[in-house]
Image 1 (cartoon, one colour):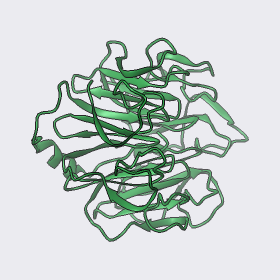
Image 2 (image 1 turned 135 degrees about the horizontal axis):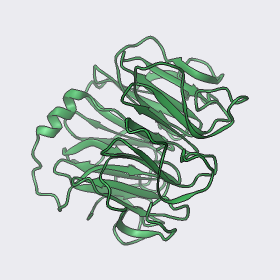
Image 3 (image 1 turned 90 degrees about the vertical axis):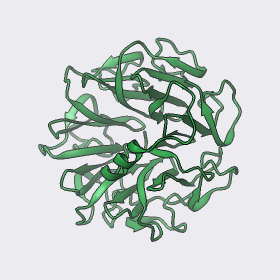
Image 4 (image 1 turned 135 degrees about the vertical axis):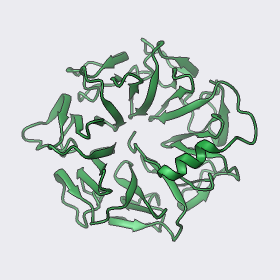
Length: 376
């Protein structure tokens, strides 16, 4: 998502995986979730894919443009991961193939055309895709060989290529020649990625300082953010980013109109630390909202809260992290936007926030300002 591909500290994931839920979750369990502008998709523990919410562009992948207020299964394939863009979705199957569906006005599906697809369409023939991040109108993904690929809209260099040479790419284009990319995240018109060296790189639009380079000029190729070599996760929002370092510290930079940087209301052109905490485990940003888990499995959100997406029982914007309830069973798999969803230990899936299109999956169109469990 415009945010999206937060990484998690290896030690934290191992600890979470070893924990037992204090209460049995409603079966079957969810293993991962993705939140778009007004739709949601989740992979269950049995590797099946389910989507719900808005579907005007076919972003649910069910072969039609009919929306749904409850989860609908997408085909019979087995899936390992996924991410949701504004009005489209991409996912990686257990065989390593990559598939995208939904809106495709700028070639963001990577299928060689700008025609939308209401069912999953394969991106090329490669069987070595590792992770994928869907933005607004561009997509980026890494392969198991460490290469990085992007496609879709490139007006501001968000594909890591010169816009005068590639303005729109309808199939994946390799970003440089490096073979040590670990992950990537796509924002509205910029992208960021981590390398296996622990270094952080960003490229594309920089009008709000979202590249973290200490300036406002854009970059059409990956530019290193500072000199730190201990980044473990990064996530891109609309025009800002947040990242976690190995010492458990959390950093954000770029636009701060809703307080999404977690520290006051001033935008930042370089990473600025969020508080003094050293227990941040994973972070996800989308549009102008951020949610992050800590090592104690508590969940904290801040930024835009117009639709209750912070889950704190209000619609008040927050300029500093606010805890979501008192539950301490959240895994690192939490996704936010104008609505938010997260997985708890044991596989329970919970959603909250905007619901005008049924994206919370509870069979209604009622907005929720606190987490509500979704039955898959």
